[in-house]
Amino acid sequence: MMNGSVGIRSIGVCVPENEVTNAQLVERFDTSDAWMRERLGIVSRRVAGPDELTSDLALGAFEDACKRAGVDPGSIDLLICCTSTPDHMIPAVATLILRKAQIHGVPGFDVNAGGCAGGLFALDVGHKYVESGQYGRVAVVVADTVAQLNDPDDRTQHAIFGDGAACYLLERCSDSPGIGRTLLGTDPDRYYTALIKRLPDEGQLNRFSGTNVTRMDARGVKDFALSVVPGLVDKVIEAAGVTLDDVKLIVTHQANPTLIRQLVDLLGQPRDKAVIVADRLGNTSGSSVVIALAEAERTGRLSPGDVVLLLGFGAGMSYGGTVVHWCGSENFPQREW
Image 1 (tube, rainbow, N blue to C red):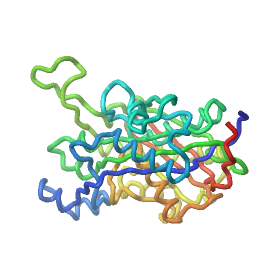
Image 2 (tube, rainbow, N blue to C red):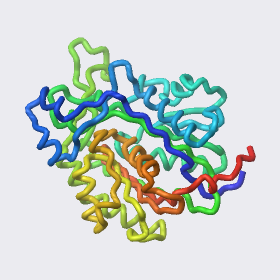
Image 3 (cartoon, rainbow, N blue to C red):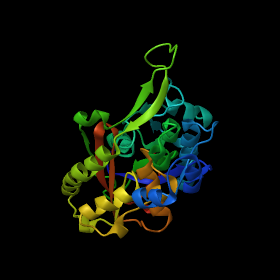
Image 4 (cartoon, rainbow, N blue to C red):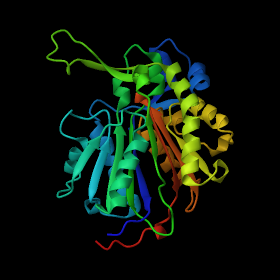
């Protein structure tokens, strides 16, 4: 197969049916609907039920992507799952997705980009596999059930986080630049800004056992996003050979709607370029940017030929960005393999 541009053929999404509203959180915590709306911009979030696992949401997103593209799930050549909340530490969630989808003869593996930046890191991994010509149709699933890691006593975490999954279906495209060069970065000095910490339990078996909960310096995350991400945007735009005025939409990690608007303001762009889903779904970690991109396409805000800026940032602290020229069905030639 010849090398060429790589495009996003479709995006699948799966979020839990269970909705947790601000009113429900007010009943549980010393907080208010006004604080959550004004400080965060969030009114509800989706949270997985006791028997709803990361692999379940991941499978739903994968099947949705295939359905929207009109392709058989068994026609993929590779499945990548990006998650920081696997069903089991080993094997990979990708393996479980393939098992639940009853797909055989297809390789699958997981990547862990450390949470919220995963929507960009995983896209870059899948992009490179298609670009190399090694695989023709690659499913990149980004799935997390981060709300399951909320500290039971932390009202802010319960207000912010939700669970969800999304799936890019990647193929070579024609007559379009497709996905541009993805620029990635990591600031290890901010390692402890956001992390999942193990709290030792009495009688724990080893250093891997114990209760896992989120620990986050919200102010540190905000300062990082507003101080580092604008510089990343400058480099991404330059590498893509476009300007911010050429960009139709800015689709960022959905940390919270208030922070997204502040970031867009800092970039000197109109707020109507932003795509926001966190107001209804909460912060779904790495999948959030992918879910937001899917919403833009499904609500008619995104058409073939449009230029989109994708940005991800989160624990690590890691960050990434790319420019995507959105493709239509006519940009994906009939498979010859």
